Amino acid sequence: MKKLHSPPRSHAGSDGVAASPSKRPKPESGNSLQIRNRVLVVEDSLVVRDRLGALIRDAQIPCQTDFAATGAVARTQFDRLQPDVVVLDIALPDESGLDLLRDFKAQRPATVVIVLTTYAFPEFRDRAKTYGSDYFFNKSAEFEKVCEVLRDRLQQSPLSAEERGGAG
Image 1 (cartoon, helix red, strand yellow):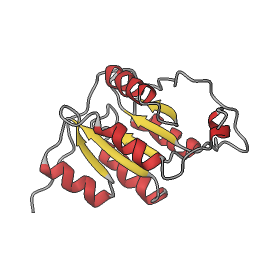
Image 2 (cartoon, rainbow, N blue to C red):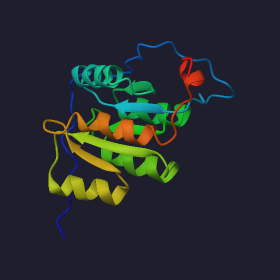
Image 3 (cartoon, rainbow, N blue to C red):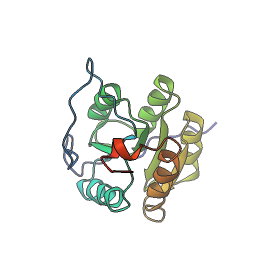
């Protein structure tokens, strides 16, 4: 059986977290922030993080979006924030996103994981499916599909107008 290797590690982007442009809510209890419709974007490229954040914002998807640029930060954010959806690149500077996928799904199987990668080869798609990926998109050809999935998935448990800060 042919051994699959992880994609090459990327060294682009920063090594921390890009803060969401919206104000951060205070924790309700403990270290976990309890917000419905929380999305964690794990992507080392600042350009891609910014573009994805802008698409989500422009599409008016009712969610709190947080960002991680490394696997280590993603693990901390995942534990602390307990996101409903993770958008995950598989080529990160410190570890494979496929390892994150496997661990995130083992820890919280209900979390929706969208793999968004330039390494959209069948062997990575197959491994992502084996590890529990809900979606697998080619970053160069299917970028906008992330917003379609977020809109569909997050509307399954929509925020009320009051929770969104609206009148109704």
